[in-house]
Image (cartoon, rainbow, N blue to C red; front, side, top):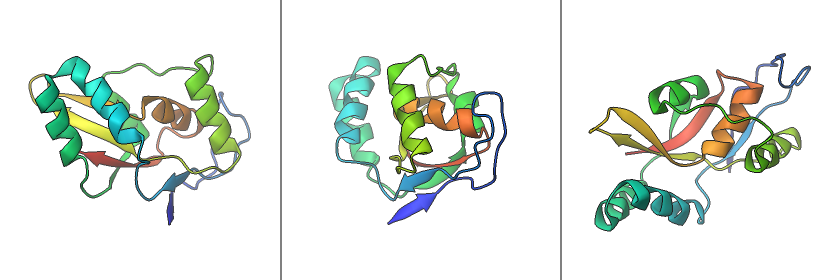
Length: 137
């Protein structure tokens, strides 16, 4: 079961003439949760990171790519990054991407992209208004 992100054709400077859709898996892949835990352990103690990951097993919701970037404060990575390039190629070939795993950091009022930063950057190149499935705590 899959989801499709924004389906409008988008002409922009990064991907001129691209008119495809961005496909999404219905749920994150199994390896996404340990990756999120690994990243969160850099920001929080081990038990807090584990609690966040456990809570990420909730329902999928959706946010626009540009809003996720604004809330996170992160910069956009370009295709010179090998992971972004790989995700961009997946989109171009119609492969489905895994939803993002997000954590609201109430201490800083910032959004933490626990897993999916490179996917987000790749999607943004196609459509900053793309609706992205996410799990968020």
